[in-house]
Image 1 (cartoon, rainbow, N blue to C red):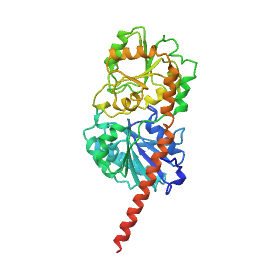
Image 2 (cartoon, rainbow, N blue to C red):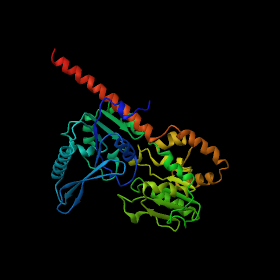
Image 3 (cartoon, helix red, strand yellow):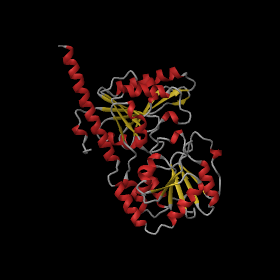
Image 4 (cartoon, rainbow, N blue to C red):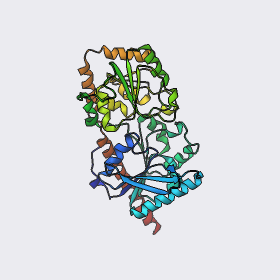
Length: 390
């Protein structure tokens, strides 16, 4: 698609996003896209509530990218219906105080319909980045709400090709947008020489992972690979959520360094010999398109992944990533990488593949589709109005 600017849109609007992911949790798809909207449009990012003692307010702050971050604070112990009513009131208050009149709604979670279904946007966009109903602790009502959101949405994006194939018959205006890359940011991983303090004493070879450690993480693969090769060191960065930390393998060659900020990641990547994507193969990973795949590659790190469909095709298919679903295969893949003679040839292939992949291009393509959809909606509504007077 041809790159466009916000000035080429039919008209300006405010963008209001409802997200199940917090802005300051892990910097990923929502942050990349919404920060680009924030440069051209007034953009609001409404998070899920935080429950505290005797509070009922909407905390609003601005991100460094210019996005208005709105977090509801509610009292503990409210029944679900009252939670939704109070968030609805806080959202209405936000719209009044900020004079949000001409706006687009952008959803990451169908659960937000429980307090936003009364709003009247110019257009509704559903950026379906994951199959949320397959995640651990997903509310039973989520599937029904997603059907409602697909019915309301004017435009749907998916976070990968496999998710698109799964949902393409559920909407008339749906497009796949796999994970993109901030190449300049992660490309620093090829040149940084100064080690982060908590990593520099870890011996080589180092095999690293960053991301959320949850039910999608293959604990058994990590444990068995670390057992087979005690001289290899495994570095794990990221928060542990929805699983018991006690279930994680504890070995002298496995190092859990905790969460890191987005701008710190290239420095850690620079010190790894291999990057890994050890996702279990289950319902929660069936349709994922890991953002870290192109990020690892941009940093010049060889990658070993389990056979996640959107990693196998296109990354393994183009001989950029090794695939391994158990410890034996993982160790064999790592040994092939360590023996690789012509790394420069592999890097040239990586750079050729990533050359046309960027969040700027993804955002511009999405914006063009929004523009086209708005024009189509305007044409349809105008036609209906004329017919009403015939």
